[in-house]
Length: 421
Image (spheres, rainbow, N blue to C red):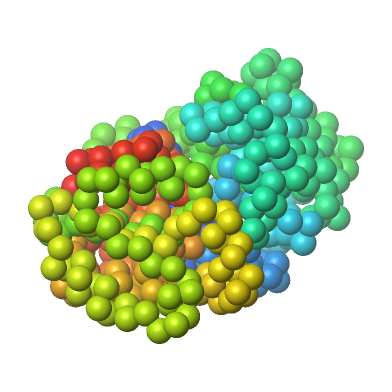
């Protein structure tokens, strides 16, 4: 037995979130950083996720990257493909969810696919096609002011329809509540009516399990990590994967501990405040970096700090501070300065003996894993919903946790190391 499920994720922390879901359902799972070099020895796994950095790049580039990932996954045995994006459906009228989904459909010869970013465990639910974060509609949350993908409309049917020439329909909760057969019948009806996409309602984990059963024969599924909950059972019932014992096992990794934070989400800012009161902390700002801040010196100071526990380095800031930095330096330059500096600090600290890292923020995680020459990740036990412990594949063997900015409890930065191997 080998890979049966191939997944394509549009950012790094989203990929680990998805892998976490699959491991919890008993699938041996590996995350690869971009399409791998043919010489890379990929550990045997039931599911392989290829993590791209394609969420906010031009749609044409996102499509090209995703098609390369699809080609590798199919060549290595995947019988079903899952395109994973954020549970807040981060996108704009220009894409990238619609264009990538359409390109994957064309490559697979699929006439209909589904979209379901629901993740009830973290408060993301879909009802009547509208996405909720907790009790609030998506358009009424902080995502309305996201600097790259502002989400002002909570109707996923409308959001997706702006991104695709295919018709977008809905499988509402009244259908989902009737079970997998009813969902399958509704999907057949939508395809017969000429729809190419179907938004799926889901307000509880039980709904995701029903949807997973209904999607057993669909070549392409798209959604957040939650939609993967019900897929492993399909493969297990067909004898394509084992019972799942030991799927989360990882080797123990010893060494110094470091937390790197680039996300400016409210959850990450709270985690920084919590850790700053307890452990040595270093802060960077885009303005200081633009003025020639010595990153190597900061790395040296981190390595000299109290080694009896993790050290924190961060460039996260409030919305007002981020806006001021972007106004002074430009949005792209401000972001690149921070990502490059944090990635270089990670590289220097690993050279100095750090072997256990927590990284907060999708863009920051992408920059760090590239700087460290990490080719992939073995996925282990869950730390918090959406965030697993990992061990790297590549130049160094490191214990890692790559955290989406919005995920994790207030004490995540300190507690993560208790779960990591």
